[in-house]
Structures are given as C-alpha cells and as structure tokens.
Length: 194
Image 1 (cartoon, one colour):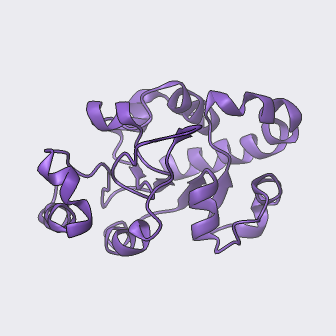
Image 2: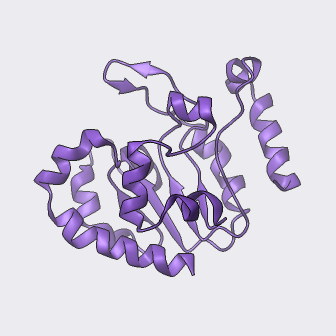
C-alpha cells in the first residue's frame, strides 16, 4: 500500500462519522491500485466481507466474476481490479437485507481515491446505489431501463444490476441482459485486463 492510500485510510478512520467502526477496530474496506484499469463501484461491504476483509467472496462475487469473464486470481491478484464501495463499512441489517450505504460517504472519499488511479479504462457501477449516484439519476429511475440502455453512459460508466442470487428472477425476466449486455461487458473487461 502506498503512503498516499495509507494517509487517506487514517483520515477515514479519524473522521467522527466513522468513530464507532474505528473504536471497534474495524478498518475501512476498499482497494485501490495505481495500476488498476477496472474499477468496481458497489454498495457497501456485507457483514461477512467486513469480518473476512475480502470483497465479493460469496455467490454474488462468483456471479460477478462470471459476468466479467475472469477468475478469482485475476480478480484478487492481478492489480488490475480496484473496488470502491459507496460506503467502506457494513451499514447494518435492515428489514429486507442490509441497510443502504450512508448517503454522503462516497462524495466525501471517492474523489481523492479516484485521483490515484490514472489508468482506469472501465468503471462498472454495480447496483442501484452506485448507478443512481454516479449517473446523477433520480431515485425513481428504473434500474432495468438504465442497464438496458448501458451504451448511453459509456465510455465513462457501465451500469449493472447487483449480481446477488436474489436477482435470479430478474435475470429470467430480462434475458436480453445475458444475451446482449454481458458479452459486451466481457469484451470490455478483457480489453482492460491486457
């Protein structure tokens, strides 16, 4: 880890908004690398990810890697894939899943970290929180329509639904996603991994 990243990690930990995590010995969870060519912006670490200190090490991650056309080793060890969640801490449990990431967290910390990755070629926005924030969409925007019209947001962003097994029904209802969107994503990932 370079000194600039280490400095930002310390700033995040000292931020009063993150004190409950810092006092509990929980570090912010993200990964940036100056050599990264692919950035995945997701929602927030889940409880298990925060405990294990590993992103996407679950069925959602398996599916995401499948969508990208890369294996675990490429994902975790190539130095080409950076991960910036919308919040770097597990937000807690809600009625129907995890709570949303804190609203202003990404705006506060992402710009500094993005500057450290000058070689990015592909930025994947995974899930509605990342998609709506980065594409500056209203909360009423329909994620299905955004993903269907992904070309509108290129080359800057590639919007995607969350790869959670909970979205299996969505996948069945929207066969165009696997047929039309995923081949393009795989192609762009392959190009960025070169």
